[in-house]
View 1: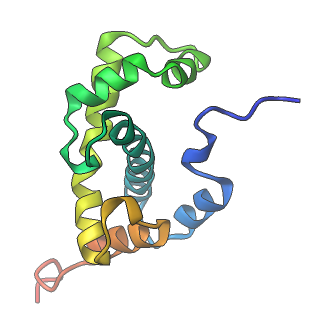
View 2 (view 1 turned 120 degrees about the vertical axis):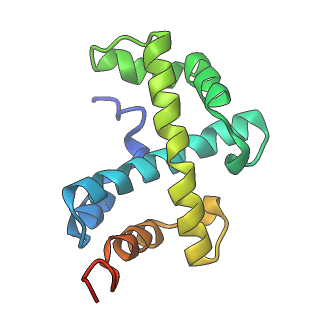
Length: 137
């Protein structure tokens, strides 16, 4: 029996289908996925650091990535190197998801950790809608 991927809980097949079905461009669907990965990993970091997710910074995230054996195993399993440059890149990518998550949480009127996939998708769909000025009106 094969072991499940260590980060398989980040996006299930059903969730991936929901993202794919969203009325979004490929770029926006990628952004939704990054936001969801960020949400789930940042919750782990925040729990480990004992602080609110919104207050994390890239250095704290990078330190967690360096110390987390699961994160290292995932990277190594993909034949990639978990060096300082990659950790810095990954930490900044995760940290960059905080802003859209904050905005999605405000729109949904819930705290960031309570965000659901439909709420995140809805936020990105709303952001993707053209404004009157985009349409030249």
